[in-house]
Image: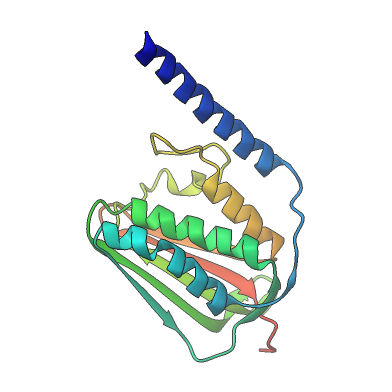
Length: 189
């Protein structure tokens, strides 16, 4: 009986956590925006994941271009988004692998012309995402994980959108996934 009661309590706690995440996703985000350095946010994020990555024998490499990468944004929200994508990449690798992070300034050609932006690339050597799943990964509540809520990437997409940015994602099953995040740069192109 005690085992059954414990299992019921565990399930209720999981449901409670899921409901809280859904409510977080639904409420309007209040941003605390200022001029921030994207590389500093990335370095802080990587310091948070380093121990988790090393426990799985995953090498984490950060390569940053020499340019200044300033954006007008919320450092906490961007840190949450980078953390989520990095953790997803680490989780996609069973044991051993590589997580590569690159940041640089580039002009991105869009419908409205060239946009001077900061590109952050997060590449993992994990299991990859099936082609049919790729268009769905940012949908709320969509997940392929047993313990996932399906809100991590949808919240990340919302954060990037709130910074007037956008994502590109490429993936190959068995080879890994490459997230590219584009954020408008404060520097003139």
